[in-house]
Figure (cartoon, helix red, strand yellow):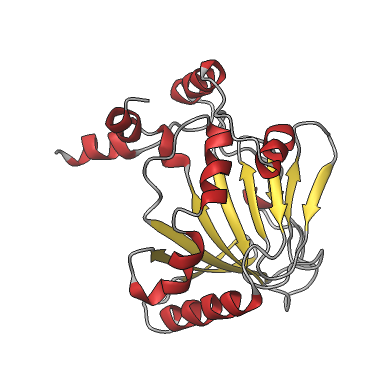
Length: 237
């Protein structure tokens, strides 16, 4: 397959494009998937749910150790952007170095139901990769950073799952979300092991760093590929 065509079938519609608006229309006419547990009901009503202690402290510690092991044995991926120092590690669920991540997340029934509730699509293929992102503020607030401003990722409902690997307070940029029923933002703080499932077609932003010595480290899984041409063609959705 030619490279340009391969990129085309794997990419997802961008915010504001015709494809993005068409994906939103298709979502509106699809039937809801009837998951009726409390988590899914909250997702339908508010567009997000925060689950404290999704994984226990022992598992969180093992994931932290796996992160540092991989981070210290790979090419440096640290960069400075808009007053923030960022360090990202991309992992694969099939990589044995991430055994604890695989055990906690791979096809987790709660995550699968949450994704299907928001997208109104059956989740046939779980993502093969995830990312761990460590951020801290270097310079004076506010940075010229789009993630620190209220924004939407796309027009159509799409899911991103975020796990706090360390405690997040109002001092180190809590995930901030505007629910479907309120114009007031919710700053989601939590201890290590807190999981957030959110529809990123709703407005959201990264919170504020109060000082340079309070980094935030999160594990993220994106499900936006479910609107790609490849996924829709393979599963006839």
